[in-house]
Figure 1: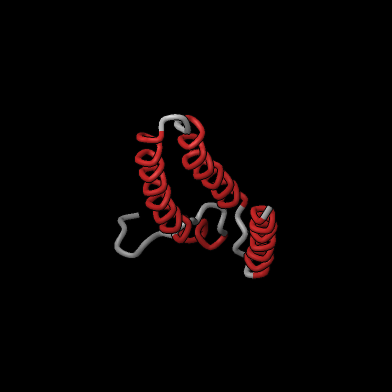
Figure 2: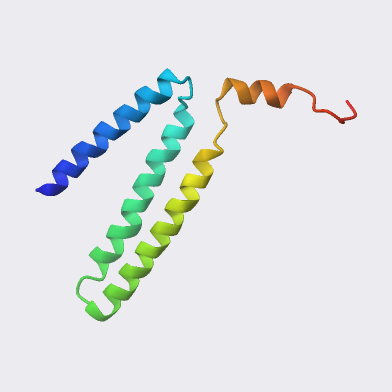
Length: 105
């Protein structure tokens, strides 16, 4: 039953971050969709091997540990990508359209 508290806490954190991003004018639906897709991928990556290999204990723990390592590395990658996420940002669109110094245009 404690997992329900963690799910509720997750919803509270998402809502707080949404309000903060909205107030800072940094909200992006594409970033939100990417975050949801990432979260679903992480859940599948960790739960499917545990479900499929539950009867073979010798393989289960090795594969399960590998899946957690892959999930952790994927999470680090996700953080790096989201820090540079620029799609939908008005500042980025204007910066992309402005000619750069030293360009031949």
